Image (cartoon, rainbow, N blue to C red; front, top):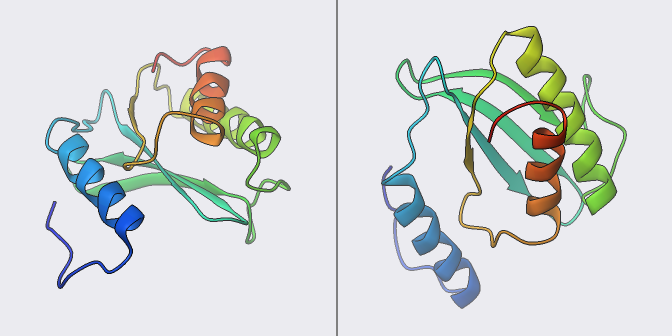
Length: 124
């Protein structure tokens, strides 16, 4: 993964990007065990299931758009998104995934999403 261009003026965003780069050095998704990547904003959650070997996004689930889960970027919304991700993983006959928290701390919404995926039968 390449570093962002220029200096990051927001200190907390810079720390998150450093954490993201150090995490991505170690985490790789394959066809058998794809990478579940979370991105969040104050209003929405975006979850992508990625096969890094082929550089393809298998599918994505978010809280807005056409095929969206009607939820917000809260713990309850993360649980709903996690259920939808687990259903689609089972539909693609995938039982194990690698969780990429994208530099976010494993707390709150991020932890609720991972726990929801685990509770629905996917090994994270």
